[in-house]
Image (cartoon, rainbow, N blue to C red; front, side, top):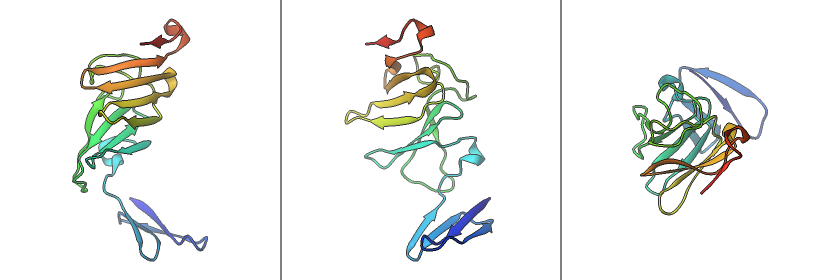
Length: 148
């Protein structure tokens, strides 16, 4: 694993191998606490929940994961919505049966509902305890979109 170390005040970059830490300037340290490449997860967007948990949107695999607030190098993400195999599509329903297609944005409301910008499906998806639903948009090939 290669990480870059650099100063924000200069343009020099130094490669350091075998360490999971990056330093930007004196007093600031960024530490890798989740290495998605080891777990087959490619984080695209992250949302921090009020309880400290993280929602990790994996656009490449069309999945949404949750990871506990007790972050460590041994933390494992829990699949919230999508396919364990990374299949893309446009399917509403139960969390693990639902399919998204390269989602790019994620937000959470004060009730804990999760909203995902499902980019390739041109849709806004709502993820709640009941499952995944399309609340707006959708490709024209799917009948002109969807509105609740």
